[in-house]
Length: 337
Image 1 (spheres, rainbow, N blue to C red):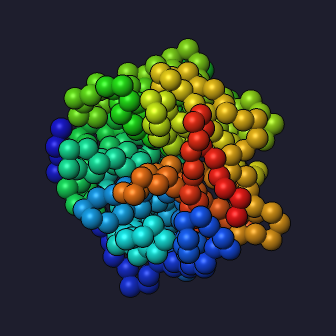
Image 2 (cartoon, rainbow, N blue to C red):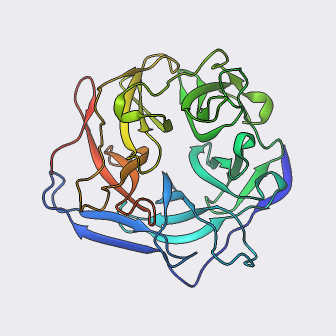
Image 3 (cartoon, rainbow, N blue to C red):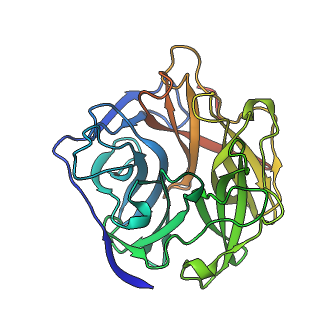
């Protein structure tokens, strides 16, 4: 499945912004507050859809970045930024993944990265194609330079309950199989819902590998008042034999907030609360418009961090931050700051 297309990496003279401030209190002792916004494309902080891995002795964060304002710029459409950190607080941009194939000519975004057998496997979506947006796959030996899967796009859902679109990929190994969680909309293109597909443990992640399990209906649909018309951006972690899904409820700036559900089989999910796990901020706070698109990550010290996007201006700017997640016997929780 190897092809000749390479994902281009672009370095910029204008650095990404990383602002930090000490938190008011923390059981982790003194720790800085992560507040990351990429200004390299437009001069305005804009970073969405974070996904973090530990690879090659450092942390890498992949995230979505908006198009250049200059329509004549040689790089068009949405892209994926790559930033590096040693402490999960201070980040330095190291490159970009930009469109380089016809199926992603309008853009690519919403990355999910997994380290498998010494390689970084990247699952991402095309952008700007409406119902035809789909999940793609690429891999890398250094976390920076990627090779595309020749069968891209590798996944779109079937079934009459959805519009055929697949975005916001999340891939995890569980009980000897890979699970691919995705977001899609109903045929009227109004309600955003979650579905799931699976692949064997020895998969190469190509198009023929995936079997859609959500053929008769969504795995999870918006039901709670705060979720409104949207559930998307699933991020999943295994804890004591169960899967915990952190998901985004409501569309951007509605406000979008983070909910949580649990599963023992990877396909049937139960919400842990009727309230958001991570709500949007209070008026005047940096995330008053939303706390959205979560990513759950366990670091090398066995600590769990919830990365998420936010803003306080209804989407004119976008920043990424994180907060530590703690665990008791049955569920994760946040400590009050």
